[in-house]
Image (cartoon, rainbow, N blue to C red; front, side):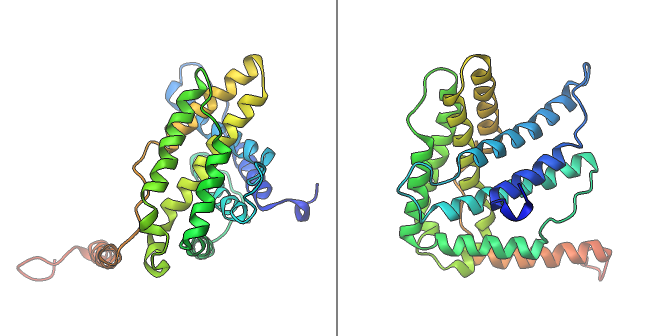
Length: 250
């Protein structure tokens, strides 16, 4: 398949695949390092599962699917950067910080439309499906709680002024993506059997544990935005030579 034929999520997964290729093998006696390597490989497994089951496959959510796919691509690209930072592998072709922020702004502006926010939550709910039996229920419960959290903070995002909420949009985009990626692993586990299914369940449990055990994503406020500017100025002054003291410039 050529690069031009790849969907955005497939391109993101391919970049993560290339980044993960630089991971060292697991070694006996290096348990801490092995845990880190395993987490990055699970990120890759989730990306693969999402590509195999694109957003909207459940039907009836065509309008929401592009937004969910965009969120997944953004999260997978973050995983690429995280993997590269731990391996020293160079991988060209990633988006700049400015490009990434423009994409996050686009997604969050769309999610500020109440009907679209609801459609995205409905797609995530359809993708998560019914609560499974056995060990898979642990991952499902974490994802379900995270999804109910998105619903609980709806008023902060849907119908709000994107000029302010986009400042906190990164956390919303990531939360949508991680719910979708967890659901993709759970769906893959349902389709497998034997030991293979058990391994996918364990991957889903660890993925949900790593990414979704956080409070619901809160939107930024005008006060938050003001304090961001104040903190940036303070840190800049501090790194440039130290903050001023009562006796004069430090």
